Image 1 (cartoon, helix red, strand yellow):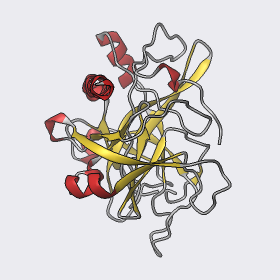
Image 2 (tube, helix red, strand yellow; image 1 turned 90 degrees about the vertical axis):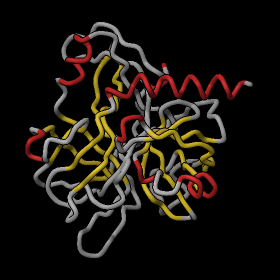
Image 3 (cartoon, one colour; image 1 turned 45 degrees about the vertical axis):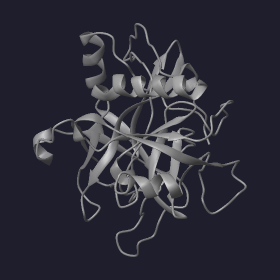
Image 4 (tube, helix red, strand yellow; image 1 turned 180 degrees about the vertical axis):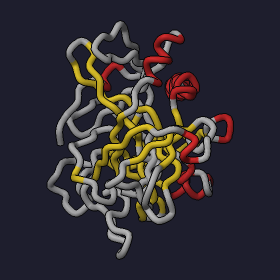
Length: 271
């Protein structure tokens, strides 16, 4: 994989042997359906993944957070006017080399909401609303913590999965056609320069690469015997040689902003 970004929203309290209560931004995020990163493997179907297209070309990944919004990083912010004019988010994508792996939908981007504080994160509003979720299109779960105990619970998670369509070779610029995934673990932030508001992760044999930007950093947990995939970060930075650690924007501090923007968009969409 290379660099990737995600966009997702929900309220969650996680389960690590004991889970108390949970609130999701989109209550329908829970059901999980089974459908490179460098040395990655073909991913299970990740129905929240978005494939962002600008001027006919793939530029980065993202994650669906509810029926009308996606979470991305600044791959979408380099030129907002042109992005809005000529960009689409493709939902339901898995294997870009075939049309027989399920229906896909290209939905126009009509608004960009940069994250507060200057971090590499943004929300996109799509022109069309998704009225019925399917096995291949469904939002990811995002936790909105309600107490310090719940916040500590979130930060106790150390093992994650990253999915994306970035480069799968350092040598020949080969791009993934099938969605790829790698496993990564949280490392001490001092190893990657103590970045503010970011999570540092690595895998010594699998690496993020160009094109993975915006990919979601996720982990799975059980709530009431239902396995839920929860988003913790958005890929912001990877090593220039597609090696070593990567940095992800920590979305936990942004969950209330995500919920606020989501609710605001829903209200104005009804007017």
